[in-house]
Length: 237
Image (cartoon, rainbow, N blue to C red):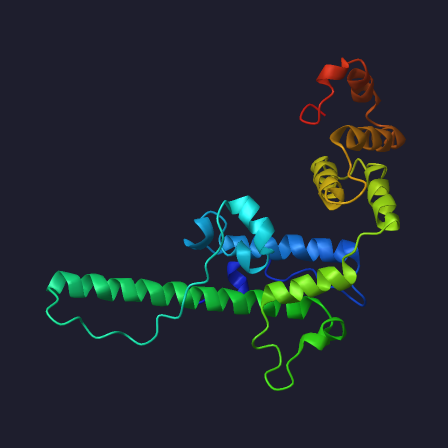
């Protein structure tokens, strides 16, 4: 069994050139979450893949409803129990094989995720985590990601202002509208756990201003403005 970056939805994480910014760390986190979640396992509830390898335990517990228990190393193949029947021997062998597979998948996924993070960020910004003897061989991807978030991922007031400004961007009619909705979701998500979150209504107001500036959607904008407030919801936008 192998786990390589080719198994991930993001073969490569978006490279960060120079000092990481909060925007860059946000994108890095979103991509590594998607990759970790894509590798299935029965551990941690079974519905979130290996997301727990890069998400802090408290957040993961809220999402999954149970913690992720690291599969133990099953060790060498045990000898059959004296007096065991053929069925019992077969069952024990199957259980051991499954344990080996689960443990190996955990280790290989850890290694692949760590490799991606190390490759995406210049060593200057995490070299303090390097062991003088073993390098980064024993470094957990969550430890590295937490370090990057703590040192470089703090969202400042200027970051929040710049994030809101993205919603005001004049829409280019040559771009599909889906790019606007994707940008909006990311802007809202970026500010969610900050002191200045963006409500769906604020997002709609700012985006509408960007559409007005484009000057090509006025019939639709006028139709929207005529709607009752109760119908001006994000899903209807």
